[in-house]
Length: 506
Image (cartoon, rainbow, N blue to C red):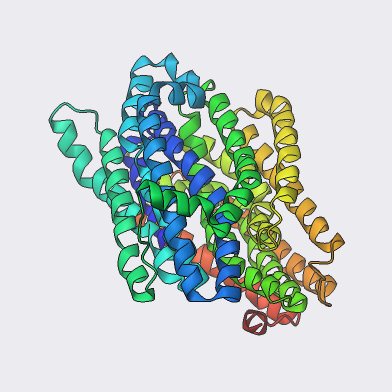
C-alpha cells in the first residue's frame, strides 16, 4: 500500500508541477534529508541495531532487550537534535554540494535552500521511526512499520491537491506545499509507532540527563551497535555518495533531468520495495536469530528461499521495464504539465534502471546475509569498488545518453554488486544453494522470454502517448495488458512444472 500510494503521489506531482527547475529544486531539497535518513536511520543504524537487538532478545531475554532500546534511544535523540540544528543552518552549503547546477536558475537554488531548511527536521522523525521499526520487526510485528510510509504519501497528496492551489492564489510558489506535506507526514509516521510499541511494552524511556547518557555510552550493547555502525556508515555512505554525484551531474544537464530521473526512480522502486525491501525486512531479524542459535542450515535455507523469490518476480519485472517502459510512463504520468518530451526522457531513464533491477532487488536479500552475521565490512568493501566502477561508467555513458546514462550505470553497478555478494556468501559457506536451481532458472527464462515478446507487441500495437485525452481507455488497455502478462508468465511456469504456491509455502 505504501508503494501504491507513493506511485499515486508521484503521478499527482508530475501532472501538477511537471518537470522544471522548481520541481528539480524540490527533488534536491527532499533528497538532502532523505540522504541523511538513509545514512543514519534506515541505513547504518538499522543494519547495526537490528542484528544486535535480535541477538540480545535471543540470548538475554526481553528485559535486557528493553534496557538496550532505552539506552540506544537516549543517545539517538541527542545525536538527532545536533544533526537537525546543523542541517538547518548549513542548508545553502548542502544544496550546493548536492546540486550546484541549480545555480543556473537562481530562483530554483533559493527555493531548494528554503525547502531544505523546512524539511530537514524530517530526518529526526524518520530516525526515531527507524528505531521503532527495528524493535517491531525484531518482535515480528511487520504491519505498522510497513504501512507507515502510507502516511507520508497521503500527506503529500493532500498538499499537492489542496494546499498548492491555495498557495498559488496568494502568490506563493505552489511547490512549497510539498515541503509542508513532507513535515506533516514525518510527524504522523512517528506518532503511529507509539501505540504499537506500547502494546509490546517497548516504548523507549529516554534518559536525557548526563547520568543517563553516561550509562547509555557505557552499555556493552550500545557500544557494539556503535562499533558496527562505523563500517555500516561507510557502506551506506558509498551508495549515498553515488546518489550525490549523480544528482550533481544531472543538475548540470538539461533542466528537468533531476525530475526525469526521480520519476523513473519511483517506478523502479515499486518492484524493488515490493520484492527486495519486503524480503530484506522479514529476513534480517530471522537470519540474525538463526545465527545466534547457530542454526546454519536454517540460515542457508532462508537465503535460498529469498533468492528464489527474487528471481521468480524480479526477472519478469525487469523484462517489463525494458520492453514496456513507454506505455507505463505514458499511462501513469502523461497528464497536465507532463509533456510528450517528458514521457520520452523518463522512459529512457526507466529502461536504464530496468537493466539492473534484478541486482537492485537481490542486494536487499544478499546484504542481510552479511549483516545478520554482524559482518558489515565485506559489503562495504564491495560497495566502494562498485562506486568507483559506476562513476567510471558515468564518464563513458553520460556524454552519449545524458541522464539515462546515469540510470544505466546504476543498474550495471547493482548487478556487479549483487553477483559479488552472492559469490562471497557461497565461498564462506553461509549460503549453500539447494538442488534444482538449473531447472528453476530455465523455467523462469522461458516464461520471461515469452513475456518479452508479448510486451514488445503490446508496446507497438497502440499509440500510448496519442491516447492522452482518452485516459480512461489508456488505463483500461494498460490493466488488460498487465493482467494478460501475469497470466502468460505464471501459466508458462505452471506448464513447465513449477509450482509457485509450493515455493511460497517453503
